[in-house]
Length: 211
Image (cartoon, rainbow, N blue to C red; front, side, top):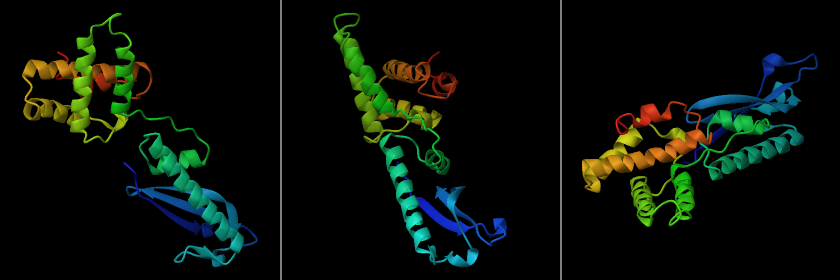
């Protein structure tokens, strides 16, 4: 989801030096969570208006505009990479700390099915591939064609999808369980390929469907 970001600039007057100048700070707020960054500019508190977010120094205003543009660029890049946007992640990227790509469930499943298709007639039958294609279409409908990072999925998502298979698609219990076990393959792939940091993802997401 494309998160709304709020930026506020202020002068850290409590850190003023002998000449009266103090660091310019930027506050980033995403979903009510805030982080602060000390920027590479110093000015006197009287040279900045917190209400208008403008300085009496043109060079400082130009710098603030450049920083705003950079933050918006980071937000767009994170969204394009399907990385959940948080204030801390934006701060990390701004400060040059790498943020790893978050794989979407549908994105990863499509890659799996593409690889699987190449093995038809070699190690698997076409029926195996078709079942995975049925499942990914069910997932897309359940998720309303909006992919979500695997890192963000929880037991509510898994249980909800099982309920969708049973009540919306009208699948029998054993058939639905079979689909859940196929879905587990994708989460297991994410874990084995270090695409997920949830080391216990199998047990707490699929405990009810793998016995």
